[in-house]
Amino acid sequence: ETDEKMLGDIWKDHPRDSFIVATKVKPAGIERRTGFPTEATTADDFLKKFDESMERLQLEYVDILYMHAVESRELVRHKDIVKAMKKLKKEGRVKFIGISTHSNEVEVINTMIEDGFWDVVLTRYNFNLTYLEDLNDAIERGSRAGLGIVAMKTMAGGFFDKERTQPINATAALKWALNNPNIHTSIPGMTAFEMLEEDVKVMKDIKMTDQEKRDIHIAENTAGLFCTTCNNCLDKCTKELPVPDLMRAFMYAYGYANLEKAQTLLSDLDTGPDPCVDCSDCYVDCTKGFDVKSKIADISRLNQVPKDFII
Image (cartoon, rainbow, N blue to C red; front, top):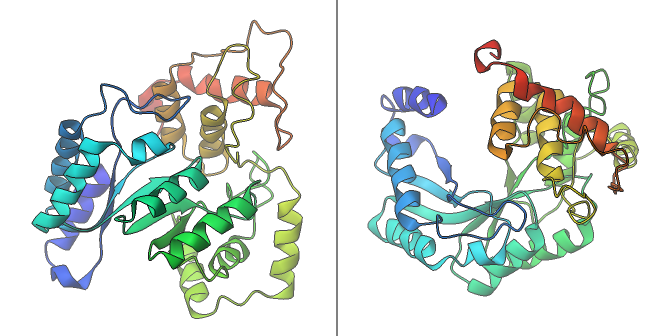
């Protein structure tokens, strides 16, 4: 919210056709384990959030509106929200409609292709995903069908270790993603001018050097901090914990150094200060080799930190 207000104050002094804006609205009431909508998932709530965002941005229209964090075919086809998004586009308050997806991307993209009216998809895409063959196939089909394909999470967590002493080669990771001809653009995260300068250089030349190729090869075979959300762990956890979400919070804290984002996610999950404390054995066999129990115990400590301690 603060970021939108800040950007709105900046943009109001510039011609509207001089910049492109994409925004995301997350539907309410999504069942966390399945990604299915519930009775609380309504178009009214979706439109209310969109209107609030537009007010903060001080804009009459946005170029792209994403239905955010979609993980299921059922949510892609939520009739009321889809109808509302189409109406916003017809009214000119949105130029293009799309979906952002962090999990089960293949099903989401394939469903969008089948439906035939979506304009763009914002999808996770990096060298560390365990299902790249299927994802590349869906992306290629989507590109041929006229979908705009935007890549996110290209840095795969940013670091290999929680101490942040072993950074992933960010330039190599971004080039790797953009070397897929079906990836039309990317939204790499940046928190410093140095990162911005690195990204601008990639815009001028995406050809990978031999060293960058070697760095990616090493990274492909290193566990790192990035959970691919394969969801194989969900049926193995005896407490039915949202393990991928907890791993994402771990990455936010240690990979992105964003404690606020990690704590907000943990608050939404409501799993407590140490949900694994009374489990003598952990039956989760992570495909990435994560020590899931210790990672959950580590990141869950944030639940006991007052919000005003985190800046």
